[in-house]
Length: 56
Image (tube, rainbow, N blue to C red; front, side):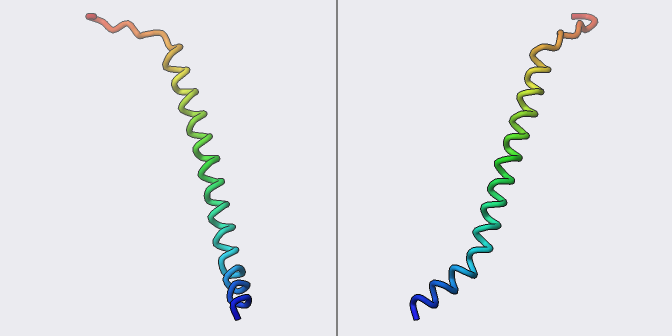
């Protein structure tokens, strides 16, 4: 009986674990994209010449 319950539990939870792994991987890829965009924006801000403002 215990073996049957464990087998059934494994079948029912396997889809959820697969979804959780897929969601986690998607989050990792999104974090990488945001980090790349942040680094690019920082680079642009650091290399941009300051704009001379009238009256300063």
